[in-house]
Length: 434
Image 1 (cartoon, rainbow, N blue to C red):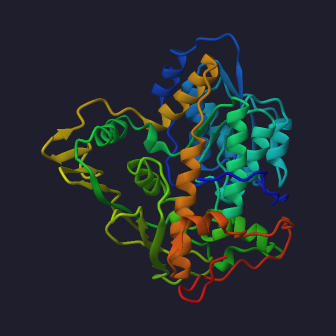
Image 2: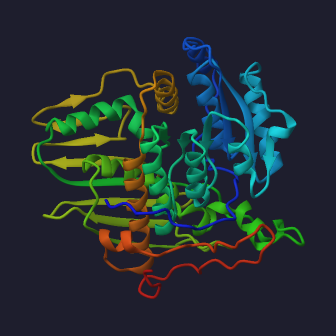
């Protein structure tokens, strides 16, 4: 993977909005006890949260649970009710460690900037991913430790901006943990180590599925109040617009993309051919509800991803990794297993991977040994974008082409009250690759 020689300048309007509700908030007494066991420093770390949706609230809970000597002191979002909901929820579980004064509840398009400048030590980035590159760049520039939800961009220019920030974080020894949560799953770590050890032999191919229901259906037009701008309406329905969410393959199925990249040793594919479309008519938005992408790693090694978000269909999230000596199966049953010459099943304790992400982040901060998930998180993000663009255009797109792409899904001058017409629903064979 190549890196740009300088950051890409774009999106000066970035907002800090609501986050995905796809992952449930995990708030447990066990989390508080876990934190109490780790009160190993007299220095209180001040946490700031950007994006107060379900995923953001969950991330803040897990951060507070990872280290007892932490406090949530600042929050940022475009919508003030989101802020109130997050603070109320977290205060019930961590009454002594949620201390967000009224002047640290930042609302608006520049809320993320105010939060980063408010004196926090750790920033949790959980707004819609269209805004992630600039949020990540601002946090790195300010020297903050970061938890960054997936994905890290929705288009090629955003990828280069975020990738430059990742490199700067590494140079400045900042801690950066990514929300590709399966990388912290105890059973998946052991399963992929078996893969590395050659327990299924040489990998011949992989098939992953991400079949689920709709995450955030488009609101009825009647819900749009008089005078509401295009930008506000689209941000209230952000998941349904590719410029804000990246579409389902980038925002959701990217977890499966990440496991494909993991299996392939975190090397990029040579090219991708994909299909996709909109089976169920939408009252708005411009995203597909199904994809199938074939990522070609060369020499006959192809990894397939099937994803769908349609109500009433069969749902499953599985990974089948085929080797010449066996098959590793993940997602069918409670534990990964191998059928082949070296049979295996995970027998260990499956710890909460969302907790473990933050355990790793705060342990690194306390120990002074930096952790940086940047290279792999950026690879998986761009591979997801590659799959989407292959499906949108109906073309075979190479890795070099997606690296060289100039795609930018939203203008730099976009403001809260603006009129804005996003790109139309893509039509394979007609939509052009940029």
